[in-house]
Image 1 (cartoon, rainbow, N blue to C red):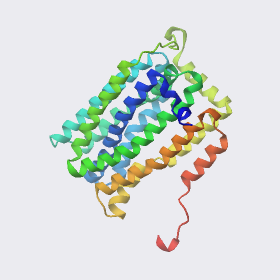
Image 2 (spheres, rainbow, N blue to C red):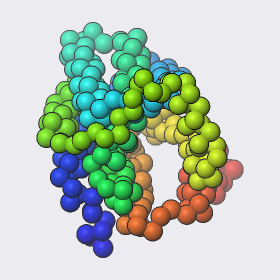
Image 3 (tube, rainbow, N blue to C red):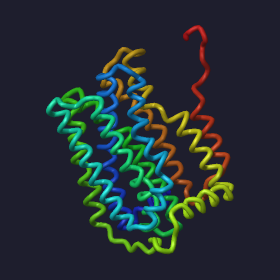
Image 4 (tube, rainbow, N blue to C red):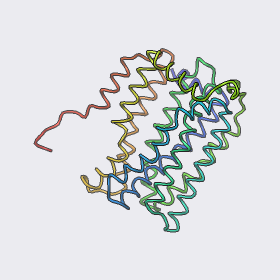
Length: 308
């Protein structure tokens, strides 16, 4: 069972990639947790905190289809190296601004937008890069392991962020994130793959490829269902980063340490889910599991109206 759960790690390239992700994503969640708390402490406005998320994710919403086609035309490893390096620069700028006491809300918005543009290209490059590191029969296991480390980072990153915020200050969360990028950059430099699926730019039209992709998703039952499912979840359920700091400060009347504990708690169930998916990756995914998970995501338990 253990061997099948971690089967994708037997491939050298994926092992380097995954190990780098383990370190880098911890730093990413440290910065993300500290940044949201700093923004809310600075503004005391849930709307302005939510606007940071808008600035980060609007570039993805607008340009993901174009970015995916562009990524398919170039070397994925080089694209990820560039995006990770630029992400490190973004983190270094945030660190310096905070250290010298020059950071303000506008800086946060600009840096969040910059990061959103970077991630627009980074995310599809990462996902398609998995196909170059492991054979087809191990793709699902690699995706599950990658998801597991993302969710582990959601637990460890905010927890460490809380310790660092309380004992050393916000700036050190940003500094540690800047340093964590060296792990993923070194891992990428150690990877040796042949990019055999780079598309010829001269033979393909960008807009036509996007149309073909949309039509393909529309005609495939599972992809169509998965796309609709993710659209609903991402639109209505992925707002924890705005809710948690407000809930911590306004309802619980607590500080940054409790906030980071709550952020860590949100990743615990996700980690168990990722490990579960990794174990059953060989059996494929049933549509009923998607429906069940969507129902459980929206269910908050019985409410006593007298308490609200």
